[in-house]
Amino acid sequence: MGRQLSVERVVDEVGSTLLRVAAHPGHLDTAVTGVAIHDPGDEHPTAPGEAVLGVGVTDPDHVCRLLHELGAADAAALLVRAPAADGARVREASAATGVAVLEVSRDATWTQVVGLVRAALEEPAAGLAPDESRDDLFDVANATAALLGLDITIENRSSRVLAFSAGQEDVDEGRRRTVLDLGVPEYYVRLLTERGVFRRLYRARRPVYVESLEPGTRPRAAIALRHNENVIGFLWAIVNAPLTGPAEQAFVDASLVVAAHLSRHLAGPAPGARLRDELVAAVLDDPRRSADALRRLGLDGRPLCVLALDTRDGGEERRPADARRLGDALALHLAGVHRSGAAGVVRNVVYALVPVPSEEDGQAHVARVAAAFLGKFGDRARARAGVGSVAPTAELIGRSRQDADDVLRALRDGREERVATCAALRVDLMVLRLADQARADLAACGPVARLLAYDAKHRTDLVGTLDAYLDSFGDVGTAATRLHVHPNTFRYRLARLCDVGGLDLSDPDARLGAILDLRLHGMVEV
Image 1 (tube, rainbow, N blue to C red):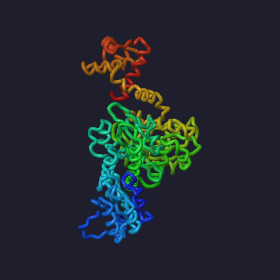
Image 2: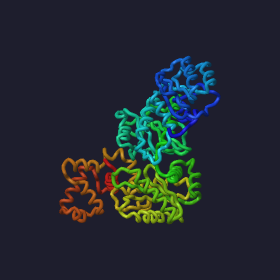
Image 3: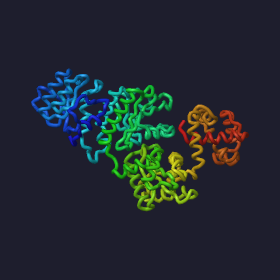
Image 4: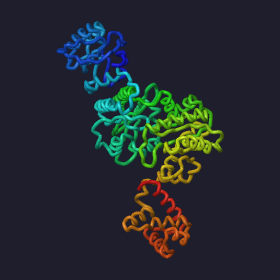
């Protein structure tokens, strides 16, 4: 065991869902040095300070006899299954022997109790990587799921799955993908962000109920996992309805256990980097703490622009280590070269809050900062940078962050630029956001959808003909040259596509709709 905690602290860290103080000798400050299981036939004596598990101790008489035996050995506590600890005689024996009696929930397994008490006593392992602590976290996830009767995941602030309870293959499609990929799908994270779920989680101290956000998925309950008031992750559970009463309190108590375990085993960046991440995340996600976070970053009262950098290329997965390195480097760049701004990693995206000299030149200024920073890496960092709108007040920082995120999405769609502002990509962002709204209808209807289906079946290229016609402003000769066909051939194809797609290209609204339809199909998957 790596450290000593008082009996009271052990109960606090394991949580009232599992342990309850049934009797004590007038105090709970005896140091717990280890965990042992009571075995009458064991030749090894109880060591001073041990918390002893009374497995098989089922009545108050047996509890009292064992308390006197443990008192002589200077044990710290006896853990027994409810209701063996009830009664005045047990309280008197506890006071006489100096050994506290802790009642273990009937819903908890002894293996679970041993694991959580030992976890509370373990010294954090220096330099321990997240993947090296996964087995412990999976034990905690399974124990917590068994206690709550819910399918759960333990996730970090970047929505990466650190552990999950067993047997979730058929819960719903969203959870299946999350478990298989060890991360929440990006589009679902975006939905949660847009619906304000993360903002609510940062504010709330009770479970947050999340209704089903897409067909085929069940509702969720979630709660933020905190360490020293900082959010270090989230506990998610699949539910049928909002948690209330004892079920809600059990979820809260379980989250305290998971948070205590996670805070010891989640090794990550250095303390300074963790603090930067927390403060930047507070500015972006938690309006209640944003003013204080801006003050601590030295950025309060100044117009700011959000800069977002992503390490992915195309459809690649985000790698937390890449984001960490990039975030640390950007923080150093801002501090050493520009002497202002703050950078942090939030959900595996690097964000920077950059003060700007004026609202008129703000985006261009931040774009130059980003270009200079990425220029130092050359081809070694395949990152792209999106610059949001200028936020003259703290209340508008969220809009700037959304703009920066959308610029990144547009840049990943096959564009060559590594740095772009929301002003430069204004039309792209309009179409991108329109695509978000129209996503559900794209595959099922519209002229372009019909043309795509016809082309796939007949091996034609009517969609290409339409694109060439619109791109040439209706000039048949120019469009035919572009496709290397005779103008008469092009006219025939044009008539055919109007018939198949149900298009009247003499109607200005129909042409505008076709342009948008083509663009939308190019930006979302159908």
